[in-house]
Figure 1 (cartoon, rainbow, N blue to C red):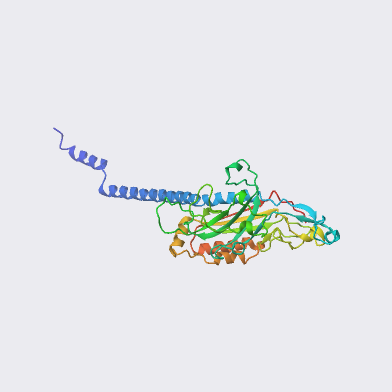
Figure 2: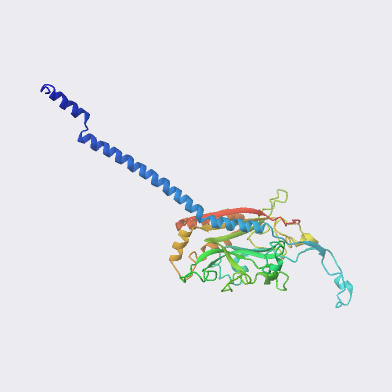
Length: 369
């Protein structure tokens, strides 16, 4: 039988080995705080990772489209050659050969490179609100053909063009999908007629891209497809700026050949600093590819585009002419400032955006002025 003398000691020892209610509550409070901090840190990391992953995914299509443009544009060609200013052979209609006597040499080309405001170049653009930014059309040996007999001729000459349109998905939506409301988006469009439909040699110089922007084919197949197809959704502006290398001797600015973004290789250029005189020098930039072209794409994410489209489902462009006015009313020399204005407009609407920009070297350019 235990001694009653040792009983108080054993009870006191048990009290020291156990936790008091206050200690348990304090421990639970500290543990709870640690769990809350850990949960907050994990939530922040997960949110950041999800946001970054979503951002990369949203703009992956835009980056792919950007790579397509720059790759195809670098292959643009004019096949420029030098010839007499007149036909020195008697044509049977003139009274004498002297009337067609050659006087000088000129640069000539049967092909064309043209860029400028989309609303000005496309007859079916829908106006500046539906077609913000600029369009570019050129010829390149891309080898696109519908006829199976031409398979393997990967250097066939084709027309190609790029521009932005605000259109629905009705004209390219597969019929096997359930019918629904048209999905309007700003889309980067590619005009890509096959080689057998290349009309660059037509009497009307604009015939070869006359159908750009038109959506005529309802049921597409291998042999019959629309010449204008979307490359990427949620591209709100395409900017094309032909440039040359800066020259400290003549003090020519890089954008002097296209100060307002407009360039047409069939027109006589009047860029600042060009040598004046007769013959080839007087042609300026006529029948010349710009040696450099700065390409800019402004893209927004799908979440922002969906929010914008919900404000009006009738196909009214959510930006109106704001983006188009900012770009087309500016000068190429101030392009960086213009892009900042576009970015500010997007930020004011809480739109997630990204701007892709690079300068493409046109390998087929034979620059001499």
